Amino acid sequence: MLALAKARQQVAHECTYLPTWEELTDKEREGALPDARNYLESAINAGLVPAVELIDSGWRASLTNINDEIERQTTAMATAAADLPAGSAQPPPEG
Image 1 (cartoon, one colour):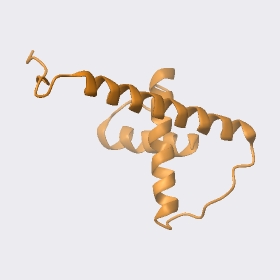
Image 2 (cartoon, helix red, strand yellow):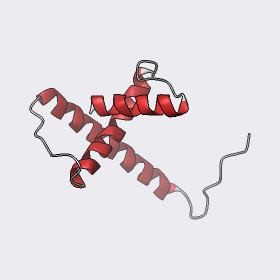
Image 3 (cartoon, rainbow, N blue to C red):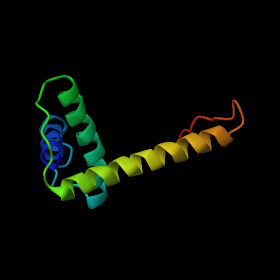
């Protein structure tokens, strides 16, 4: 997945002059991994790439941590949205 995230960032850099993978902060790199996981899973589900078993338990642990964090954030957002009164959402102020 790291290779996929790096390759996607390189395409973005070449097409839009966004930073390269090496120029990203650690937080930006970490944030790119869930997208890479989703792209890879989508490609596997579409039959574009074969599914392979990840043997390295470190990768498996990383994927589990990413999935857990995504689930935690999704739950937190849903809880926060449910606490808002109906129709209370306001657009951000224009700067």
